Image (tube, rainbow, N blue to C red):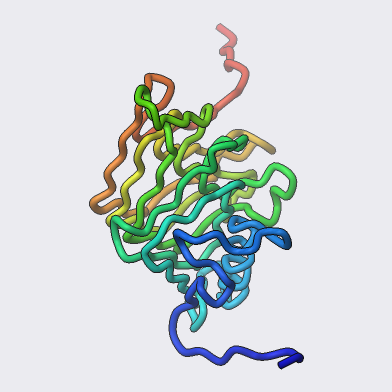
Length: 231
């Protein structure tokens, strides 16, 4: 039947609504799986109301991924106020074998920094992030320099950091790069108030395969000229 249809739903957003079914090969001639996931995240973020920088979580901000393998050919950019959850160890996000990006999930888009500045109230739960790196064996495919999750504080003295968020029951495996990299703010504009704070990590397991990456890396960029006192 031809026409346009409006989906009415109650509760979480199932990625099946967007034609994404883990473990199968949907038609990607129009958009890739990563593109569709990004559309869902953007839609969920639009359902989050913001008042005085504290998002009021509303219906439609929670994204549900059923069991299956979701191949990411592009990084996924997270947005404030959303929840992503799967069913456990059989909900797997896997790096594409021809991957060219650096991290699978991140908040920083160098082409659109202002839109992705600062993350509040992110909740990630019950899934696996697989970098597909392995050292030896006939089935090894080794995407170069891919990491799991990258959170970068951006030059915004109020909302620039990764804050008030929770990662629970997450496995990050087969990584060449860092499993999780939380990067602090720099001194842009003379401002150091770009904190990463008040976050909860519960039962997060990280496995890296080389010396090129850490399981968890925390860093703060602070570049300034030394101050000299006159005798």
